Image (cartoon, rainbow, N blue to C red; front, side, top):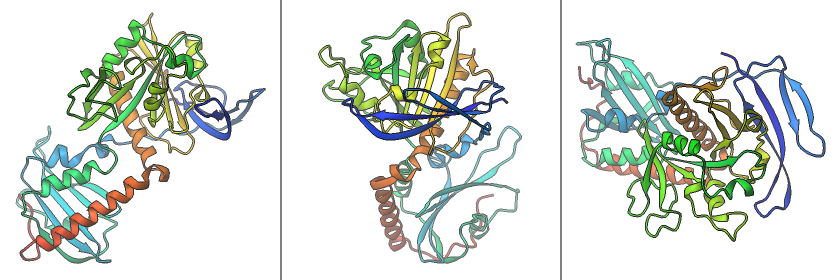
Length: 399
């Protein structure tokens, strides 16, 4: 695996064009092998280039970004428990015995729902030797001691409540911006003013997901209007690993001939944490993209995509705001994808993982995080009051 990373230092401008004294640094992944070390650019009258050492890519297991309760528990025989830890803070535990895998083996999946978030583990299953609730809890490193319970929950609404809790974790539904750029365009005013995209762009958008009619749409809408076509007639939607994804495609959002800045388009794409920039140009156009071309203080990730007609392949590079931790999967070397379905898979996993990392930054938790804490607290206290029966700490799991 080869990897090359640079840092761009950019001065941003506000949406009305006024320059701001805000310096943002972006790490760029190109996947290219380079004899140079890590480069640092600062944009101004003269470009200054410094060098450091290459960064090391981080590979992640996308399994732990999956909606476990939705995918592995819902509709299957499983147990849910409620208890309290040493600090008398209540928690939930969900346990399911999975179906046999390709090797004919079963395993336990367990989710520990706590005030600080959900933790997930897999445990081996031995026939005729079922695990107890206590032994499962002992495998969670952060749970030192149990103060109360846990007791099994039999109320039918618990599954609905846990699904809601999982949805509020911040990593369930995603919205990504998709911006079309023609060759030679260097400002977002130019890019947002492209009324239509090229045939190659349309093929790329169709690869991402299904074109859906917004009016009357009853699934995840990502802030788009579904009543009066105020944000366009169509959008692009897909479901990946239990996550609903909506794409704010620039050419599908309302276009105004009288508005140079295309405020309606920028209102959605400029407020997306992750943007995909499709550059309909040459390799040189691809390499010349800089995050400072896009006037957004909110977007933290830019994925730059271009189509290589001679090879029927896609090229990809990635810009990440410096505060975003390194995340996988790493770009291949060279960062060119000939298999279009593999490219789609890579883009969706990379975009999802990047969105999760950015959401975990303090600035993005805010009211959502406080609301989540309140939901967990209210739900646990309610279940503790309603749960009847004996302590199930030593109860065997299904075998």
